[in-house]
Structures are given as C-alpha cells and as structure tokens.
Length: 243
Image 1 (cartoon, rainbow, N blue to C red):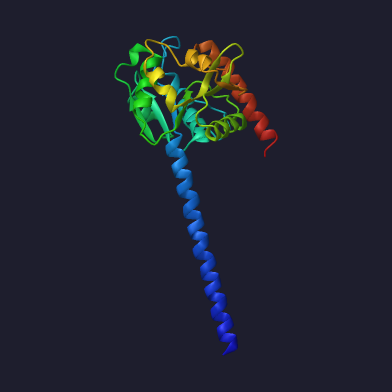
Image 2: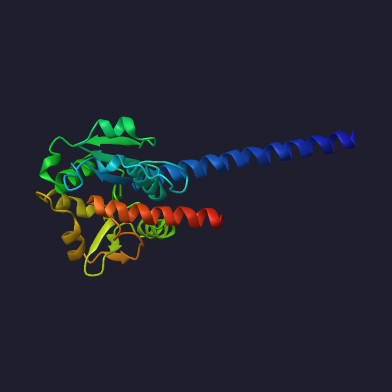
C-alpha cells in the first residue's frame, strides 16, 4: 500500500511538472508573439529598379548559404531576425514578386502610389500597423550581406529601449536598417517624394549601430556582379569552416 501511495505521489508530481512546463511554454510562446506584434519589420520593395533594368527582388542568390533563393527571400529572412511579423511593402513588380518568392512574409502591403518614391512606401507600411505596435524596423530588399549577429544585436537593443530611434551607421549619416519608434511616425508620414527617414533620424539623434554589409547594396548590374562575388566567397568559406 505504501509503495502504491509513493507511486501515485510520483505520478501526480510528474503530471504537475509537465502541466507547469506546458504552461511555461505557452507563456513563452505568447510573450514572443506579443513582442512580434509590438515590433514588426517592414521590407521596402516597391521600387521599379529602373537603374537595374529588371526586378532586383527576384535576382537569384545562387551559391548563397542555404541554397538558391531570391534577393527578396534573403531580405525576408533578415526581417525575421528582428521579428516574426515581417511585411513586404510592394508596388512596381507586384504581384509577380509574390508568386516568384520562395519565402512568404506575414503580409504583403501593396502601394498604389509607389511612383511617388520612398515616402509612399514608408507611409503605406506604417499605416498597415496596428495600435499595439511600439515601433517598427525598416529594411530594404537589396542588402544581402548584412551581418546577422550585428542585425540581431541591433534588434535586441531597439526592443530594450523602444522610444529611442536607432539606425545603421553610414559614417556621416544614419540609414537602413532602422528602427522608428511610434512617436516619430507622424513626421515620417509627413515626408514627400523620394525622401526616406534619414533626415528625421539625424534630427532625432538616433543611436547608430555598426552593421557590416550596409554599404553593399545593389543599384546597378555592376553592383550585382560585385555583391554576387562576395556572396560566393561567403558561401565557400561557410562550406570550408562549417559551424
């Protein structure tokens, strides 16, 4: 009888532990979901790629770590380093890019007036966000060499101080990737034409972060040749020295 009681007590204790473990997992999952809702990421990919001559977002990153993917697939992956709620602001090449991407974002945000420039993309992205959002990360689709560890550190710092604007350090100016706290949004929505948020970030004295890869963006076919070679080198090194 005593052995039965011990066994029953052990079973209850084990069941209680599992029950609390499940609750703990649910709490952690809910907490992560709340954080993602409070700090989403926007990928700006609405431009016509006029200097490049074809949609940059669909360039194939053959040889990149993880196999073949498009430039936009890569950008969505970068966004997910910052948040699971990743939204792609699209325009000129939509819906083509939606159907050609292997990785799908949380939401596609079409911009009817994408020809007006960067300000229209930022405005559409911000207007797509709900009242619970404390701030938003902004990335572009043509920086495939961003350092993931530096990007993750940038995201953690921004979430830790949600009222402080933050951005990548370009030397004399701040730039994308950037973090825009909610109080700055009215000024962002007041921008016009091809204005980005760089001036506002400068005036707000945004905290700047060194994020390797920000200077390796793709505007022209020549840029693409150079960046693709760097991607190939990165892939070869990763195969030679696997984690």
